[in-house]
Length: 262
DNA sequence: ATGGTTGATAGTCAA
Image (cartoon, rainbow, N blue to C red):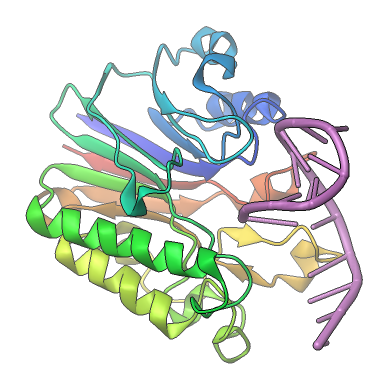
């Protein structure tokens, strides 16, 4: 059995219902994980997605901020959520497919502007959230699992447009990269995107603030697909749909895909 | 060092 999973920070699922439908129609992943839905679960436009064959959804939401949803053509079982760092935010939800694979959908805190927890509480919360992930994966090591989402960190030098210029910019500071690495190592997670595309610049996010995001191309790879080591070798075909960043009224993130043959 | 844009929501806060 082969299935394709995609992850996309949609930055309001209600405002961009049409873009989600376009992705489901044109790319037709079996499973689509969304972040920043910015919607209570009961206000997600589920009927439109159902009409396209996505009859299953597992989601967590809150008014105005955060929110994660897993849309699927394949049956899903809700297997819960975690609230690392006790933020009370809808930033994680997990679902199990009938083939036994568990999908974790994460929206890691962005962390504010200043990379110093002494003066920026949000940066501390981001580090604490990642420490919570690390401890959880260490205590219950993932198997038959896929982790996707907006992790709000670009770990590698070739995951950003300028390593040197971003070293003090939240999303690429050494302390964040180290903390993300600790969470990844604790779960023995394999970075599927980089397993498939080991070399070269790779971005999934471009700021709204650039005059011409495409020409400037000052991107970062904030969105990730990881797999537990027992299924990582089944992954292939990773890609980032950069074109979606140029759709009308776009999200500032592009969807990331991977296919698993299991 | 600052500004630049977008979204939810109704004056800012978050990204």
